[in-house]
Length: 111
Length: 113
Image (cartoon, rainbow over all chains, first blue to last red; front, side, top):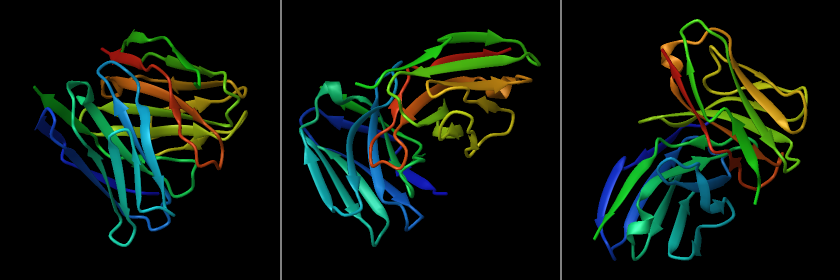
């Protein structure tokens, strides 16, 4: 299996600033790390993912970093907007078939 | 985009009653999953399936059964519902052994009184 810890559980930032969410995992075999965004009342949707052969991935204001040695990965949202306010979940997978999720971060972007 | 539907979307059940949550996907994905989401716990895997006729236990299978009668359909069954099973349940589908994401359904809100 896998255990994923996600911090912080609550994050408030000012509009235009950056937000960072950190996750750690235990299973060194984990090789796939997706991030999901969930709006209130909606289902989780993939926003970015990274595989173990990469250390950094960037797309549309999102940056994911992976440190396999430390078993740590993180999501950085640059130039945050009110529309970024949501729940964010990290996950890890050791076998591509099962995802193990962190407990989530509630991000609030204040104007 | 992948299409995963769930029914019912909302359900009120009585303690000790039987509840069946249904999920249908039109993506021809091999894998299907049932999660529950509770505040402070994120998404926890209950059961999953690699294909028709297959069911596997996830992290929290106690009190739940699953059924995968076809590639498209995956059901979660609560034989004797308890108030502790009040939660939001998400179904998801994904390709087997693939570095691809899981696609989630809209969720079912279950209240057990």
